[in-house]
Length: 438
Image (tube, rainbow, N blue to C red; front, side, top):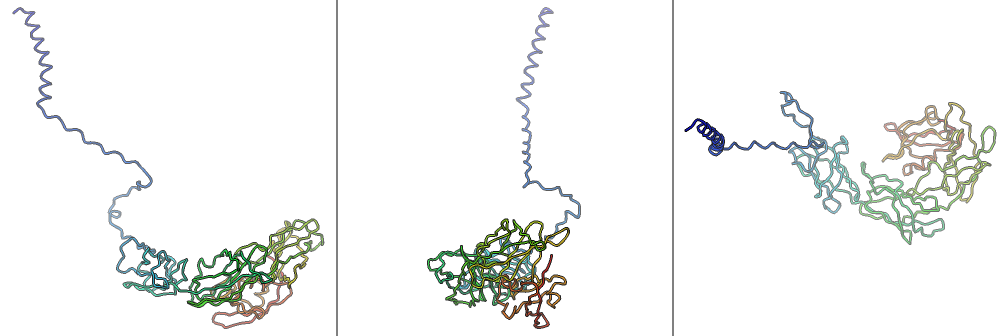
């Protein structure tokens, strides 16, 4: 074979080898496995992200979780937890009742499940528990213990039936009814939502309040076009209905007068005149505020029989509360009022009374504070005194607005207050009212 021919044969063989050998290797050798799939990166959200934790010896050691003060019903009960059931007066379990220790921390509370069961943490053992529910009178205080099924029974309560009439004895067919005063027979019992104003629509003016805790009540009613009225004290017993309760709404009266500058005697235009410290009957506006005209004259329509007070305000003058007003059965009464100029840096308001701040408590109305060097403090009244009588009228069943109005009065007049002092018995104090600036 000639030299050129051998060269071409060698080149062809080399080319075929380069094609065939890789193919044979690919067919004979095992194919490599697929690379492991990379896990998808989780999306970062507020719910899944957590702050990094440093795994030192101290942080890696497990921490004992602190026991919550509020027990959770969906956790398995611990052996030392306090468990029990809340029942109504008929012995049926009450769901969603609030249960809590009345003599311990306010945090020791829970709510019954749908079967009336409750569970409190071990710290509640031995405490006095009270249960509340919007549709039932509160329970009495019950001592609960760990390791037993404690039973807490909501009160049975009583009822009040009555009627609301106007000053002529005709039925008031639409009105608001509220509980102005409640003095429980058992300490710690709460009136709850039953004390809220209730709208009544009845052609005979009749009403009925049910499931009331035992105790003493004063009811109030108000209607459009009438000052509010109140019932006499009503006593409610367990399982009994107090009937024939009558609330008479007094007729509307008007207070007229003129507001003048105390120093110059000039009429004050643009002064606002409104009732002050008068409430009752569930929230109807008693008398809308009025503004004096160019001659300083005003007419406030819808004032109650009294005693009541009015507040008078005008820019540049000290606001003034005028107390001790009464209608005495008249349809129109008159009271002229003077205001003092405020001046620079002086007091902003003035009123006439004894200089005491009152608060209601389950045991009655208590003096919470006294104006320093005020008439009440100078006469010997003390913080914490509980009112027994005001000018001979029992204050034990008096509403807070009534007590406030009876203690207010014109400067120079006197009022006698009987009080009870813890550990010291009773005391009687006569106070001369003064004009108090603040």
